[in-house]
Figure 1 (cartoon, rainbow, N blue to C red):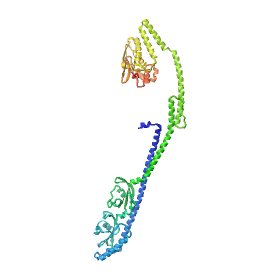
Figure 2: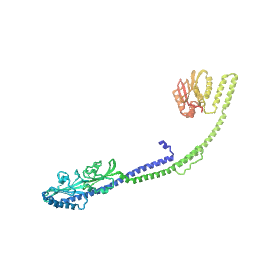
Figure 3: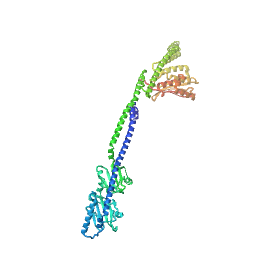
Figure 4: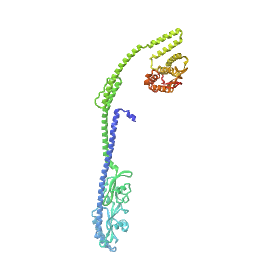
Length: 591
């Protein structure tokens, strides 16, 4: 992937680069902006709902004070005291008259109020007065240690509230709160009965339901211990203790909001506590509701990112053109120079780095043109000097013709050896001046080598024994001319000529592993370790070969120039034992 990307044109890479470095910050900025704005929206919505909850709690506190004032009015009523102090044995007429008085009292205290509450006056003399349709069983038979009666005893005449374990269903309505008071005689402070006010859930719901009837929020009114007094829209948990992962936070704090889960969905819990009643009102708001309100922010953020990216691409396109256009012009000029046109020039319009590069390129072309001109002049002068030198030397063709004449005279006189020597030397001269091709067949080069070896056999007679082994499959391969003869000459002159006694020269030519090998081995005087190291240095530093004549170094240099450094000569020698030189060449066949 990276390789393909790097292979793109410079203009495309610059556009991709500038677009990427623009898009990445835009994305991060957009995400950050959206998250911050969403958080702000969430906080604003939560604070707005918390304000509503605080107002509901205030309304509930007002309602609680009104209920306590109502109970206080009844508690202090002389009518109530006089009725409850009468004996149980009074006549039915008197009881009826008492009932009418209490009924008038109930009507006066309730007045025009629309509260869903039930009033109960329970006397120790057996009297029972109430506003509901019937008297609940627990109010008919008073048990002083039960619920509201126990708390009323503990309150000693003060109004007490009760929500725990006293929830009783009366038809389709629920009693969710009770207020109780002991009724005492003003003469002797003796308890003469109880006042109980049952508050139905509908009275509580009226305080907040109008603000939440069109929402999907789940709202709960909790007492100080976490019991559900009222709920909306679901009322199934009324009278039970609230069970939810958020209860620790709700019960441990005065007010606030935080993220939570409800039925495996994300919700925001918002709650507030009334300092007067210690009631807590909590609502669970679906996070999707807030997300919907933040859609406009999300849309605006995405739109700004898209607009910013389009502008960035447009700017990067024109900016990249300012870089690639002069580069492309310079590239076209270079191609013209490559084709041989040295009269082109780069027109630098600015003072930037690319213009500096173009001006330097112009200077280079001028210098190159001057250099080529000087080189041609030097070449012409050198050719003239070489011609003059050749005129001063012996003409090789004249020498070759002279050797032919010597050979003819030797044959006439019957001196066959001289004739053969002249013919061999003439063939060598003719081969050395041959310029048909840079490469020759191996068998052709071996023919020259045989001429050379004949001359050496005549010269040294029986001092040197030559063993020649050539693989037939190699004879049609091609090699550079005069590559083997200098090595053989080196073996004879430096290895065998100075040896005391007879010597042996082995020439072996073969192919192996797609390479051509020429192995030349002699049992001459060999080389010392120092001399062998010196020779190997020369072979691996062919740039100094000119200092040593036309021996091994020149052969090594020619092989390197023809075929590269993977081919060449290896020398193995031991003093007084002999030397082995191995030539490694590529296998070249006729195309």
